[in-house]
Amino acid sequence: MKISSFISTSLPLPTSVSGSSSVGEMSGRSVSQQTSDQYANNLAGRTESPQGSSLASRIIERLSSVAHSVIGFIQRMFSEGSHKPVVTPAPTPAQMPSPTSFSDSIKQLAAETLPKYMQQLNSLDAEMLQKNHDQFATGSGPLRGSITQCQGLMQFCGGELQAEASAILNTPVCGIPFSQWGTIGGAASAYVASGVDLTQAANEIKGLAQQMQKLLSLM
Image (cartoon, rainbow, N blue to C red; front, side, top):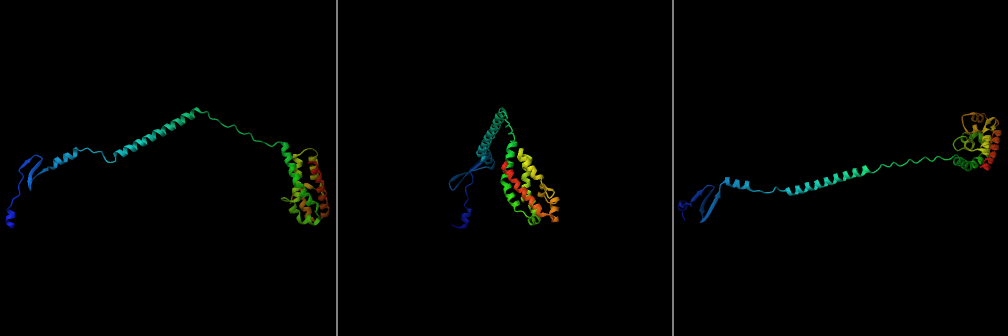
């Protein structure tokens, strides 16, 4: 076919035009075309539920149900608590030790510790007294320990036991009450530092240690 004869062939034109559409034939088939205004109106008339609206509704319903449950629980809790009387437990009275039990404890402690102190004092001599007086008169030394036990018996026990403990504490050792030999920095320390008659002092202390045996027999 020549190009000139192809160009001269004319396509069929639309046979009718009505309002919103045009109708024609192409290759033996009818073709219709809507106008843009009508297409827009058709789109506007469609109704579709927004995507995800059902999920949001379910979430809102669930949260509302939980909120109502929490509010109901709080109301019940305060309602029940308002009807219950507040019970305050009665204070437990402090148990004070009786004088008898305290006295027994003092006696027991003296019975356990005095024998050890008495044994150490029975071996005392002038040299030991001069070298170790500070150690013996502090802490758990035999002079400090035995005097402390005698003071406890004198203050918290009665009868013959109290009298015997008081006599031991007030017995002079080289003119100084035995109770002062259990401390340092006082008259006993000055006497030991002088070095005078330490043998006599040691012997008098040993005599008091033997006298403590009577305390043990009275317990």
